[in-house]
Image (cartoon, rainbow, N blue to C red; front, side):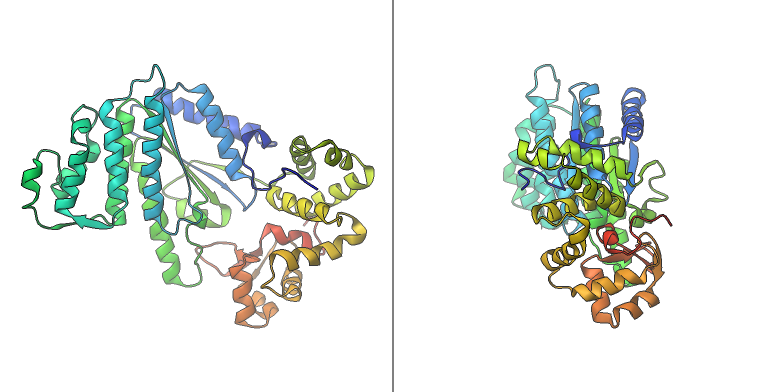
Length: 422
């Protein structure tokens, strides 16, 4: 039925009822641009439950900042989901730096030092390797020697020179005698990328780095060793706050404990009201054809959609449920239970629907939590418990101390008390 409805669409025009938070963060960033001395950065986290709208919110913030600031603003965006490691995230940051500098260099009126693009390309080239022979490292630098000597700041080159004795001063004929190996581990790579960002800032560019879905970098939390590994990964990424740039981090509420000391400035996004969800859907309907729009003006359809909005409360979950139920002609009170079973059979084929229903009902309220022991008892065995965790039917209330569990917002609608206040 729908032609363009995508629950994951982060077009900032689709943002609903976040004006106060958006204007506050935009103002804070612009104030930093005006008053910052180029030596210190601004670090800010956007915190909220899964699906509450952190990504679309930050896209709206970046749109407003880009339109209000001058042209010399580089915006680096990396979605941590699917990257697998913070090293991969840092390598993507380096690649995006090249793209942004190249684009800004081509805009009339922008004064970007000619050597800066070459410096960024050096950073991106080195970020692709865990380690390489010193001889190869020198030869890679010499590929950019002419451009590097055109000027620009030298934080990254100084880092490579002081840390690894790698520089453009040597002639190619002298590099063959160099022996040894550079080990550019993730920690050193982080410092190298921070140095590159410092070069960009001191060259006159205003720089924003957005790390989206940081909590999806690595979802392992079951053992203390796994959690410590994840903590080190995230803290490694947060090392970018040492650069004099604006660092924005999107993170789920249950994960934000790792940010407490490092990132005290934050915006908390709370769930939307049912009326806001209806407005959200109406705005997205503007992209649909006349037939679809007419269907959602039908009183019966509107009543069913309103009832569903009262049960869900989460923007992403709401859109997923609406899209699924409408396209199967199941958005009605009389067919709602059938729609729930069809939803589970379609998207969670590896999980038994009866197990999901049993787990959902053990919670006294869809937004409540229970102990790990009670959850395990409801699951019946550790295998079912693992399925519920792997498919994110449930997740810890606190990633770093997984002793109490909550339902993923997508499953709130299945709870008998969905739509009732606590």
